[in-house]
Amino acid sequence: MTGTDADRTAPVPGTVPSMRVLAVSTAGAGHFNPMKPWLKRLAEHGHEVTVVGPPGLAAAASGFDFRAGAAPDPASVAAIWQRVAESPMEVSRELVLRDLFARVNSGAMIPAVRAAIDDLRPDLVLRDPAEYASALAAAEAGVPQARLGVSLCSEIAFFESTAAPVLDDWRPGLHREIVESPVLTRFPASLDPSPFSAVVRYRVGEPLVRDVDPRFVYATLGTVAPTMLPMRPWFDIVAEVLGALPVRAVFTIGHDLDPAQIAAAPDVRIEPWADHADVLSHAAVILHHGGSGTVLDALAAGVPQVIVPLFADQGANGSAIVKAGVGTALPGSGASAFHVPQGGEVERLQELVAETMASETVRERAAEVAAEMSALPELDVAMLGIT
Image 1 (cartoon, helix red, strand yellow):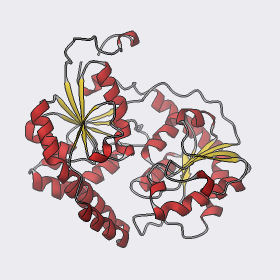
Image 2: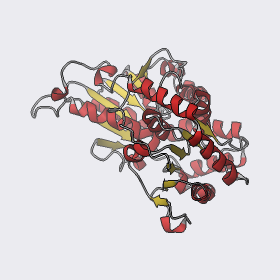
Image 3: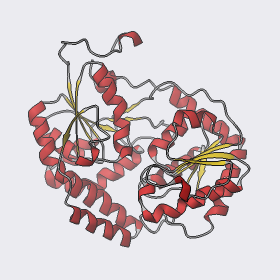
Image 4: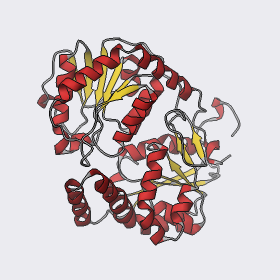
């Protein structure tokens, strides 16, 4: 793509969009949100964008042309989650990745995605790597596909290898076709060396200008944990940790919990939501769950991290943060799908936050990784092969 920022405007009325892009995602905010900058930029450049997803994605996809697929059978979903709750970690992850994401959730979406491809004849399918109906329908129609890096590349590879028996049952060789498609990721190479041959690394927007308050801590446990009853004790634990430290803090808890129900010290402000650019520009440390979106925003801002992994790929993100030297992580239980408090978490987290805030080595390493990310090219539709 050529031109200046002045050229990056909405298409001229009456012009014909040059390409059709079909974006397909699961309903999770952590899966669809990384797509939004791409979809907005594509629309700005005159490309026709359509989003397909389960009914639960409709609100998040407002503003785009949205087509709803079928929701999975509730009884099947409930049965899988019951088995997950009763299984050790290794088995539970297989159940979620193979049976829930691939067989049940993506299986329900196949008719809608096939219909959208037949109707729209897209030039590209941009897909959430945990949504496989899009991979199948794109491969059947011979449409190029690209994956959004919603997790570490190593985790995406694990997701796909676990789902491979289902994928190759749908279409022989589908797993290989997926692995050979490009991955678009904000993760820097130093933190996320990729097993894939086609990886496009990018940044979103300009680096934050930091004005650090050495006593300020930002804390969040994401948007999913507040909806899960077993995770509820963690909110009290985090509030207690922040209140026991000589800091002032903002702790966001989402819109599903009542801030009045969480006891907090005077210097700890409980909020439903905070703008990441605002709080990360001032934070000396971020204490969080290890969701990929939060990890990436903190990395790009150069903020040292303390991670409390609760479920899904958060443990892998925590390990990557520790290995890269940009923060610390509370060890998970390792025995089940969900990290439920067992005792002693308040004291250990206090130590980790205090140690991380005091570490010049961690601050320097966080700044180095932020500089690496700021050197990446900004998101550009040319990265998709669209000119």
